[in-house]
Amino acid sequence: MEFKENPAIYIQIADYVCEQILLKKWKLGEKMISIRDMAVLSEVNPNTVQRAYDLLQQRNIITNRRGIGYFIEEEAMERIASFKREQFIEFELPVFFRSIYLLKMDFKEIKNIYEQFVKDNFKK
Image (cartoon, rainbow, N blue to C red):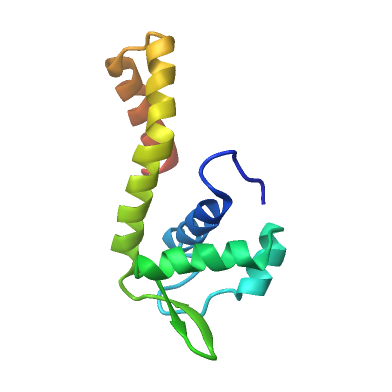
């Protein structure tokens, strides 16, 4: 995996897990990839993955079944949406706002571009 400078790597790993669930690549109620396997996949220390899993567990997105592993909560979708909104507002939106300010872009223009993006990528 390639990581950005911000947020912290463990948060980016948690975000990756959330994205896999939102994309339905990982199913609700399903057993998750182990900490060791995620560490190998993301090329980080297992302690970093543990921090990510702890964060997801605190958010009730995943649960640890002692001796068996981590599982995705059945109600994870709403919790993920809340987590991702918070991350977006804290880390991505300020960069976006700075760019539109510096480029002197109009919100109408941005709205039109956004609507075209949604039409091209999500509406079928």
